[in-house]
View 1 (cartoon, rainbow, N blue to C red):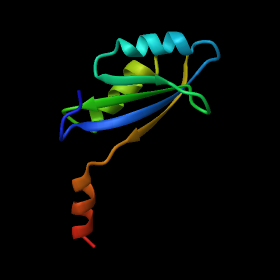
View 2 (view 1 turned 135 degrees about the vertical axis):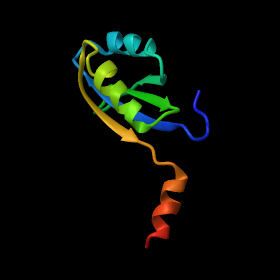
View 3 (view 1 turned 30 degrees about the vertical axis):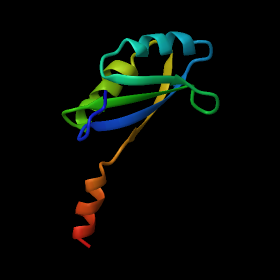
View 4 (view 1 turned 45 degrees about the vertical axis):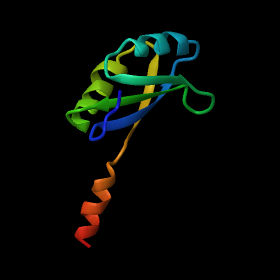
Length: 93
């Protein structure tokens, strides 16, 4: 479960036609993936990933654990920024 201070990302996934169920079931078993949902539209699946360490671990999970799943065609990762990232950047203006 996500806690304050965790790095969080959402990954949008396009699958091969007819492979949505297999990809969904496989992703549900990967540790660190908090939520998996099937979608209608341009993307087929969205997952939520959280990491206590850093966004680098999230990137490794996408590259080495999600993309290799049979049926995954493409991923788009949306890394969530922590609110203090904006506060720190405003200090430099």
